[in-house]
Length: 242
Image (cartoon, rainbow, N blue to C red; front, side):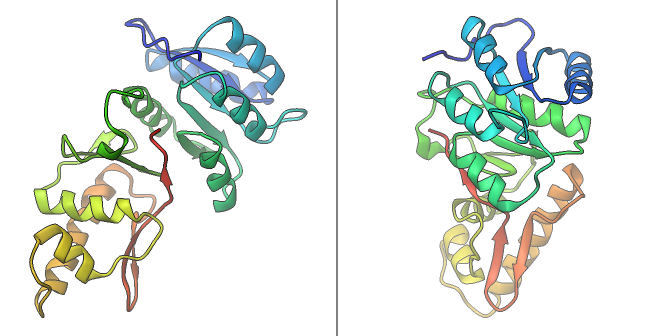
């Protein structure tokens, strides 16, 4: 299997999009961030280029003529463990789920913000390769990378400065990303104590602190939803770390 080159030189990114304007823009953004980019404008060309030269990461559009991004992702996953990130105008949840289920590591919707694109790529490049951690050590969702062993939580590649209890709450939400989790479950998991009358307020305060710290990184969305009458839900789904 063609592995991530992981060299000490500038990261090499393969950008696949049938829109030449997009590949040129992305290449300029990556170059300014210290990365080298090569462009392909079809899935077939991308497979040919990748067979001749390894890349540290592949950025793929979905809507391309001939071989679309989903098919390209599936083909690449048969020959490489390098991170694959979708960069696409398709913003439906079903597209995100399909992309991640095919082996993609992240999903970014156009129009993209250059700083976020760079941060997410750097986060993918920092993600340990298979074998560096046990799969159970790392929980990866649509937006977060959370390491149980090191107690590090990353949002879009930016480290969150969390208290131990905030980390425990976020970890439990991430383990069930996309599903509502009750305040009782969060409290008993994070605090290790029996839920009582004051516990719900304690959880609510920690959720508020988590939301503020997430907003300091990205204020464009609320990453933790309140599910009225049930509890809280972290935007999902999980992504495989295998």
